[in-house]
Length: 396
Image 1: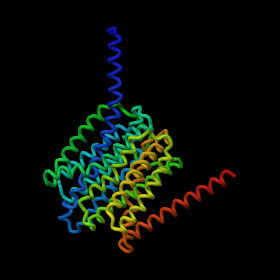
Image 2 (image 1 turned 90 degrees about the horizontal axis):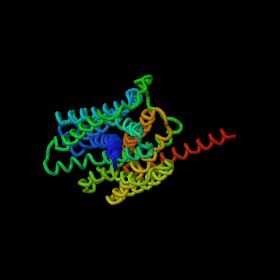
Image 3 (image 1 turned 90 degrees about the vertical axis):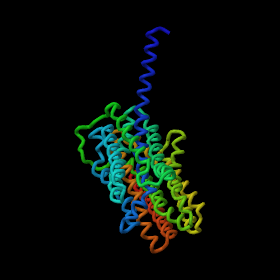
Image 4 (image 1 turned 135 degrees about the vertical axis):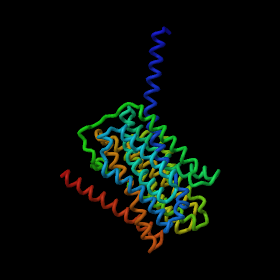
């Protein structure tokens, strides 16, 4: 090989490494940002012990995260279009680092509330911007959806177990996992700062509500329903396990209900998103039946199987299929469309579990779950009937 050919080969290899560095950095950033979300879960009770209303303080901590996330999604749904996906991702990572700083400096229930609000804003900025940025960096939309959903699923499911592992070595209100993830967040911020600039739409308004079109609505509503099941499991199953004397397995339930969905990302790329949604619906229905049976029969085994089915359906097939479908349906303003997708998902994650909780106080959890399942079945059937009727009249 001549000297010129050798130089060209080295330049080609260097270019290939640079082209791979961008997507890898973005995926790592999404993982680190979502890893922080459940990092403090094992210490919620410890932080709330000094509060006047212990259980209320814990519920408020969950609500503050969703409030921060929805506030950013609703008011700044187009921030990735106005600032560019890269800058929006940097802003999201900065919010995540600020959240770590707050809880490290003030490991109390007040500090936790502030941390959760910042984490919500971080996720709202990072998820949509990071996924859109992957596409801008040359990643195929289907592959971008798989990489993004895999990183997010693993991150959300691994934060709690990571802190539990550190606490097993040494009990502390500020475990080493906080410092480790904060350092990783800062490293990702620095790495993203060196990536190529993303497209910027200077004419786009800074404040813009998320966009949900006729093409993306089915994907968003599927995420709403599937993540509502996840929220219900996370809000009810740990308490049920405690009543059965199996409270030590609560962390495993959280992992099963979220992180197992990452196994779906190891499969083939999504060719037909709607088939993935159908599989998600089937697994979700099975998980709800098993969940009701597990609560009624006081069976921890059935509760675990329900959580696993939900994890595969919600954070596996539905999340990946819906994310791919949204990316393919929107060729422009992807950041705004993804904000709409996540808006519906997190509304499902936060609202139904509150309703189920109130109903369960009067009727019992098994009946509350049955009532919610019936309501969902009626709503889905009615929507499909109305849609079929509309299209039949439109075609004639």
